[in-house]
Length: 114
Image 1 (tube, rainbow, N blue to C red):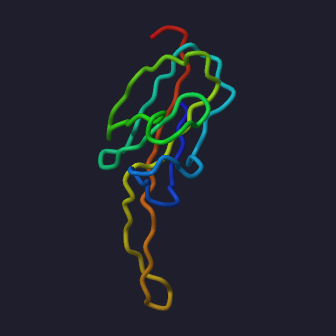
Image 2: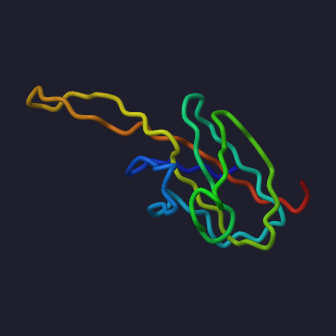
Image 3: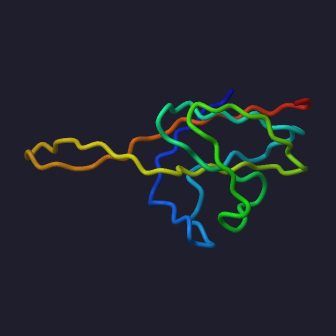
C-alpha cells in the first residue's frame, strides 16, 4: 500500500464552507474501490474521493488507526488533509524554541473488489 505523509499547513475550520488545498492527492487512479488507511494512532484525517468539493459536505473522516474500503464511483483521485493540528516543540541552534507539525502517514490501495 503506497504511503504518504500529511504535514498540514493550517487548522481546518469546521464552520467554514471552504477548505484550503489538500495536503496530498493521489491521482490517476483506476480502481473501482479504494482501501484507505490512517497509520497514526493520535491524529484523525479527512479525505475526499474525486474532485475536492465543498467542505465539510464532500469530506469524510478517517479516524486514527482506521482502515476502510470505499467505492471510487468513477473518481480518479483521493485527497487527504490533516484534521487536527498537533505540534511539538523543538530547540533552535540559538536556544530559541520553534513548533514543528507532527505529520500523519496515510496509505491508499486500489482494488477492483471490496
